[in-house]
Length: 287
Image 1 (cartoon, rainbow, N blue to C red):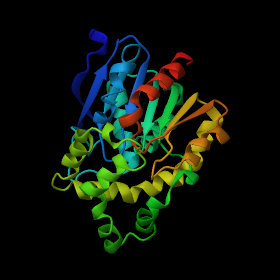
Image 2 (tube, helix red, strand yellow; image 1 turned 30 degrees about the vertical axis):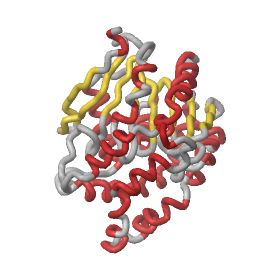
Image 3 (cartoon, rainbow, N blue to C red; image 1 turned 90 degrees about the horizontal axis):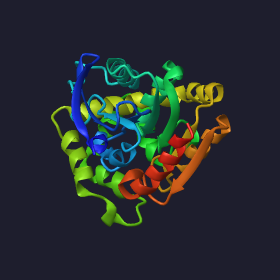
């Protein structure tokens, strides 16, 4: 039973306190889980017990999210380069030599930066609604793209509603066939952290910097072509932000990519953890 016990730990990385969940045999292959917006490692609460029966699972909270440090945006540069820099320090502190990478939403551009910097460490990639292709971006990105094109106060202020409960609720429920499967503590906890003083500025800084991820898409794609990592795209096909075309596009660059769709929305683990974990276990067995 010790293997599936989840431990809640903290470690210093890039000068910050990083909270993480850890479970599974220490000598088993490692899976590093990187969450997205607006959530934390809490999103993996149903997945970790299943994967940790066979694998050593590690799920950190990114800076500014969950129980990790969230310094004021004037004290810490909230860019995806810096999120990746912090996660690199986290990997180094834990002396992770080889690991499979699970990326979701913001975890994808963070994780793909890590993969490009550490190709020798990556045993495989699972992308759950983690985008790396322009064709994956839906029209829901239009207001954010306006902010990329013109970094004005008006365009920044126009995005302030994006961090309110109405939108957080929408992200969890849109495209979900059976809303009774969405645990209310999921979006409630996310909103608790979003509502902390100063957190809206952190999130607006990251929304502005997301443009650097789109600019890096060609480099991510070149990485897939060069290294051809075994890759499993597991995708909620009703995701309002990241379209199924973004999942299919992995196959254009990587002959070792497999794509699986589930009839659900952005937070596919909320409704399909059992199915997704089964597909991940099959994928991991082939690495």
